[in-house]
Image 1 (cartoon, rainbow, N blue to C red):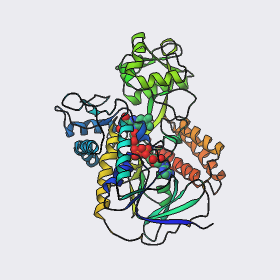
Image 2 (image 1 turned 60 degrees about the vertical axis):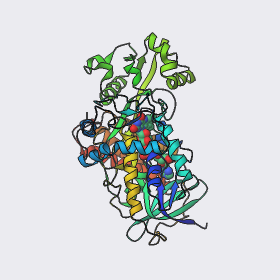
Image 3 (image 1 turned 90 degrees about the horizontal axis):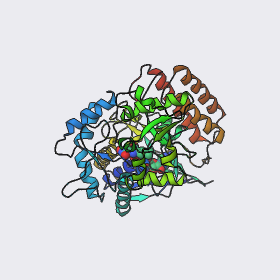
Image 4 (image 1 turned 45 degrees about the horizontal axis):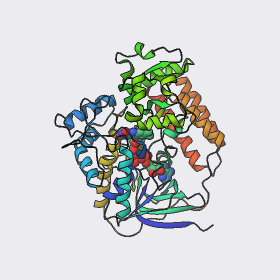
Length: 488
Ligand SMILES: Cc1cc2nc3c(=O)[nH]c(=O)nc-3n(C[C@H](O)[C@H](O)[C@H](O)COP(=O)(O)OP(=O)(O)OC[C@H]3O[C@@H](n4cnc5c(N)ncnc54)[C@H](O)[C@@H]3O)c2cc1C
């Protein structure tokens, strides 16, 4: 087979908020965007309902936002990264507005909402609970208009290309053929890794491929053990699981087990409004006792559902859930990865030519636990910084050095179903909400056994197994509970 090879100046892998902002900001560099799907369906950005945080209210300040972020992060955060995030947040919101995002407004000002663990109302919405979709649509439109950006046909990146002393692009599969894209600078913007877990709210392309490729190429990664679990995903036979908004509990819904016991009363003074990780652990404990968990919806809340929570109402109707009579079945699910490819405040990784931004990257801004609505903000703030850093390196010509990874030798085959299932179950059971050292050792054995069975052509699956092993080893090293990492 003759290998297809193409050259570009900057290659951005991933077309969520982080990748698109980085691509736009890198002008006048020539950018090619490579993404597993070109309609945004593979991007977690599209699913973000809660909103985007920024201290733009009259009683608020970047310092207060930073304090809240550090408190949530337990405090494993980089103070420098938090400072950048919170001080550049207003500029990030202005940037999105200029690029066509119509944030919800009252007569003279943006509507600001208060969310758990934020001490001020500072969360902006666009089209109500459609914030992520609005941001994605606006950025996609600007990227398609931009003369310096080309969208490559949908394809999955499978490995990074290594030159003599730098990363020089990536190898990808369009399902029929492998091809190489050589680039002077390569940006990983592939999102999170919730898909490695049996239960997740993430799109199924969020399986940590970016971190896996970076690990394989020898890049430094950190905080791999910090995974945030959302307490209330809809417990149905679907993959991924849809979110049940936490605002429902704010409106009066409450958690019960299948004996109708309000178990949260014994867990936290705030009962059903306790912090996300406390609620997730309480539900997990009920599940391990064999109890199912439901959200009970008082009659007035159920009656208001079509107006106040139209998306949830439609979802329950689709799955024939009689909300008023039976409540809403819920389960925790893997939701957000605080760790990733280690980067500095401009998105530079430990490998020359390789950059990372968004959920795939770790500049330690979230520490051990992310403050809600800070991740869309991170994608925008650090996407802009990375793009500007690339623009300053403006040089012409082709990628230096020859790619060492030979193209065309293997095709991307779908993951072996049995191995993929074993991996996701092991991660859910032993690397989940509450972790026991002996369980994590069991998972390590499973993962290593699976990797030994993995066929050579399954490079994507192999990379994911490798990543799972690194996550488990990081978790085993952290013997004391910290943020989202809870040791039994
Ligand atoms: C259900 C849900 C609700 C959320 N709500 C909020 C919220 O309200 N506020 C908030 O701040 N955050 C929220 N988050 C988190 C936030 O959406 C994400 O952290 C953020 O959008 C990540 O942006 P990103 O650009 O890094 O990744 P993504 O938006 O996930 O984009 C990743 C891109 O990489 C592509 N890709 C992945 N692997 C490959 C590969 N191997 N080859 C090629 N392309 C690849 C994908 O197709 C996609 O285009 C939510 C997340 C979920 C799942």
